[in-house]
Image 1 (cartoon, rainbow, N blue to C red):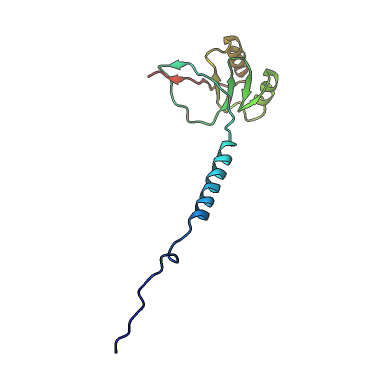
Image 2: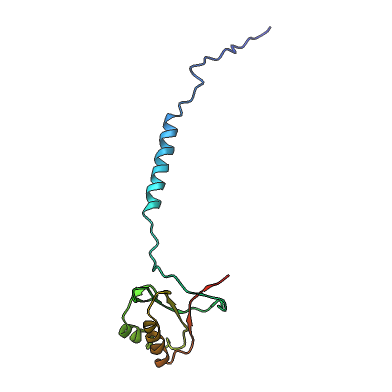
Length: 134
């Protein structure tokens, strides 16, 4: 006795509707595009001078940034020279090295003021940040 199977497939039942899948993909794409555009990195725009004899510093430093408008920052926050003196004169801070990141158009007078302030407080390791000239 032979059994026969009904091997005919109806074409209307085998199709998958991909419209909801495409809608979900577009919603995910829009979500990631919108959330990535709202994350900004804040920073201080400084164009460092170039030097041939610069070295790489690997120690943790105080970072004093001087912009082209002679605005002074300590580790990313705006600070006056008086406040800088108070922060650097705290106990234990005289042994930490200091890195001065000055814009190439910054006033030499402001850089010298910060340098003199550090020397007055007894900070011996003072470095100036530069870009290596290749």
